[in-house]
Amino acid sequence: MASKPRHIGKILRHQGTLASLYASVRQQQELLTTVRRELPRTLAPHCTGAILEGGRLTLSVDSPVWGSKLRFQAPRLLGRIRKHHPGVANIRVNVAVATKARATPTRKQLPRHSNRAAATVAQAGRDISDRALSHALQHLAKALREN
Image (tube, rainbow, N blue to C red; front, side):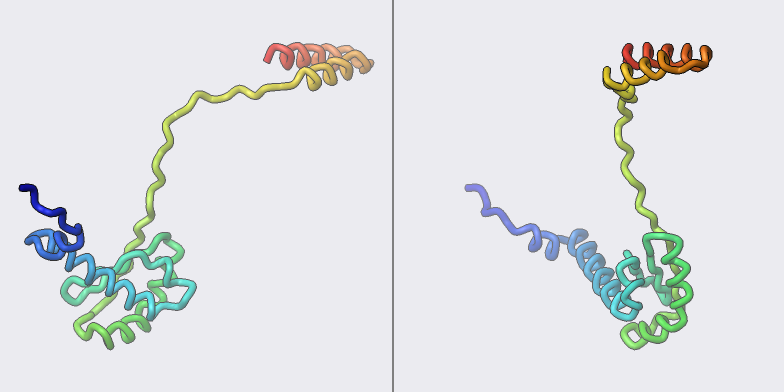
């Protein structure tokens, strides 16, 4: 008889390597929440990751501008974080800019012109006294009709 399906959360929490990975991710999420609470409200959402290894707290931000602002806040932040994690010796800021997925290349669409536009340009070419400009406008009107 087939076994009853188990909830993915139970599998993640109780199966060897997956359990340790799950615990690590949860610790990082909790650390990130703590860091964000200690940051100014404008800066907090731009802090996207926090990893504590040894005595170094590595924080990731979503752009170089916010990285500079976070580096400026680092000494004050270090004092506040030590209340929660006394072993933190320093803070490193890492800019982790997300890359945009490239769209598949498409054929370039040629602009479509209306017959009305072609007629207007042709009429302007007929009404103008300058022969060179009149010829150029007639040529343009012809090209507009062809597209």
